Structures are given as C-alpha cells and as structure tokens.
Image 1 (cartoon, rainbow, N blue to C red):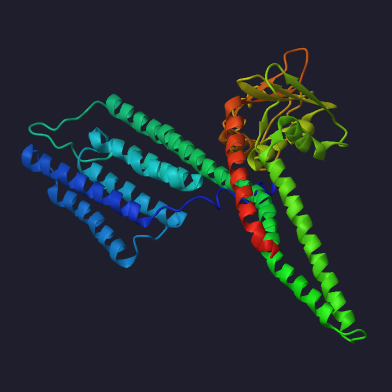
Image 2: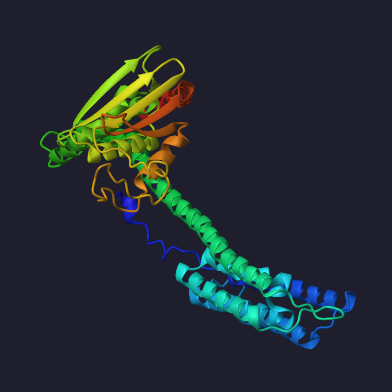
Length: 460
C-alpha cells in the first residue's frame, strides 16, 4: 500500500452529500408537472376527480419547498438521513396523489422510481434500501387500495393480472435501476478519489525533482554576495598591519567565505550533472533505476535490451513514468516465486517494456478489471481462494494512469501453459520520447544562454 493510498479516507466518509437546492429544484419540477397533469385531466379532458385533495397534496409540496428555501441556505449539504427523509416524503406525497387517481392503474406510477434513483446516486446504500422498501410497500398498497382512475362514463377497472404486472414492473425497476444508478455513481466517485491520489503521487515526485532546481537557483543568487565578502576580506587582510589582533579573525572569515563558495560550486556542479540526466535518460538507465531498489529481495531480476532497429531510446526523466514502471515492477517482485524478467524492445517506430514474473499470474475473473480503482484482489490460479493483495487497490490504477499520460499503452496477460506467471507490456510510440527530448534540449540551450549572460555579473 502506498502513502497515497493510506492517506485516503474510507469510501463512506468521502461520499458526497446531496445539496438541498438540488432536492428543492427537483420538487419544484414535480409540483409543476403534477399541477399540469391535474389541470389537464380535470379541465381539458373533463374527467371527474377529487380536485381539491389533489391540489392540496401538491400545495403541501410547494409549501415545504418555500419553507426549506426560507429557513435554510441553498448551498446546504444534507446529511444522509435528512436527505432520505425528504425523499421519503416525495414517495409518500406521490403515493397520495396516485391513491386519489387510480393507484397503479395510473401511468404516472412509474415516477415512484425517481426518488430511489436520486438516493442511489448520492446516499448510503442502506438508506437507499430503506427507501426502496418504502416504495415497495407503497406500490403494494396502491395495487389494492385506491380511488377509481379518472374517466368519463363507467369507471375503468383493469384486470388484476394487469395490475400485478405493473406491480412487478415497478418493483423490478426499483431494484435494477436503483442498482444501476448506484454502480455508476460509485464508479464515478472511486475514479475521482483515485485520480486525486494519482495527482498527489505525481506532485510528490515533481516536488522532489524541483528541489534540484531550487538548489541551483540558491547557488546562483548567493554567488555574488559571497564574492563581495571574499573581496572585502582580502582587502582587509592587505590593510591590516602585522601582529594585528584582528588578523586571525579576518583570516577565519575569508576561509569560511571560501568554504561557502566551494559548497555552492558543488551544488552548481551537481545541478548541472542532474540537469544532464534530466534531459537525457536512456531506457537502460530507466530500467536500472527502477530495478536497483529490489535487488537482494530474494527474487532474481533479469534485464534484457533488444534493439531490433535504430539507436537505444533516450527520453526525458519523467517522475510519472519512473513511478509507474517502478510500481509495476514492485507488483511483479511481490508475486514472483524466484524470477522477474524485464525486457526493453525498440524499433524505429516503437518502444516496448515487458515485465514478466513466474508467479501465479492474473486470475481470469479479475484480469479484465485490473487497472480500475479499488480492484484489490488478484487471486492466484490454483490457490485455495486466498487473497494476495490488500489495500485500496489504487497502486496499479495510479501506475496505469501515469503511464498512459506519457502516451503509453498498458496491456496485461498471462504466460501460456504450461508456464505460469503474469506479463505486463508497456508500449510507447518512438516519436513521443524523441519529441520530449527535443523540448528539453531547447530548454537546456536557453538556460545555458541565460547562464552565460549572468556570469560576468557574478564574477565581479
């Protein structure tokens, strides 16, 4: 588990709260639709119906909206239970209208599903289940107890079989559509949290890379005042008479200033060397850096460089790529029995990095989902159901996301029988590395021109 994974809160704690203004707007839409339906049925179609009771139920929703709008700010985020209670009111209010206008024989009974879908996208699953149970109870009552459907002439009484079919359709809709809405919203939340973790990891890597630039800037800025101090102490030594009690102190001051200049010179030299590494990183060096931390872990790591055509790929030192490849290699080492093979293969058009281990491989029922956030289990084939991976399941997702940002394509597979083990293949277009290197060369050239322009001032 990475530090980014450990810092993430639990899924329930990170679940977004439903905004009060959202419920108020949805209820205003319901009020407008219900009012229009009642008016059209009563005055245009001229169907007899309990108009007063229907308008009273609609007015109650309008009054509740006005109360909430006046009493609370629109930006208020509701707690789960409060939002569930407001949605439960919507179910009961619509159920009352349906009772007055034909029960499940009323085609608008399908709208009972709406509060459940709203709950499924934002609230805790337990609250959604409770709301679904309320809808189930409401449709069961409405299937039996209701006033006649508004109609001219003889009242319509639909067969019990048809009403039962409507009941089954509503119950099925509540279950399937609620479950679908929950899954879509949950995947969206997980993706947002995982992307936040990805950004955190990338920011940390970039911060470490930026420290070298800060050291170079500090060395450059401090060079001029230290040169002035050295010049002044040199003049003081020349002016002091022999045997002066201050001669020893001035000599110490000059020696310390010379020491500071030496330290800044080393920092500048280190920065220049690091800049060269940042500008040019052959793929063999990239592999060597990600392999080095895993040496001596008991798993042998074999590295192969296969150049089919063209020179060895040389790209830019990218913290995101370093982290992504390192994470995939770490997973391979964790699951390998004794051997991990890392192969770099390049042509004039493409660059491929293959990481293969001799472990149990990816489980067939999980391999298609690896790379999605919160996929934590990679059960080995032939194992007795134990789980080999824990945590939040963000490691592979973060690695895959970071690599894909560098225009890489990540593919997963297992070794063909009778061999066993997992294979991760990372493919880049060759021009992606070359283009980044050209950009860095241009930046280096501009920086060198800038340094040449500043040197005379620093030397004075």
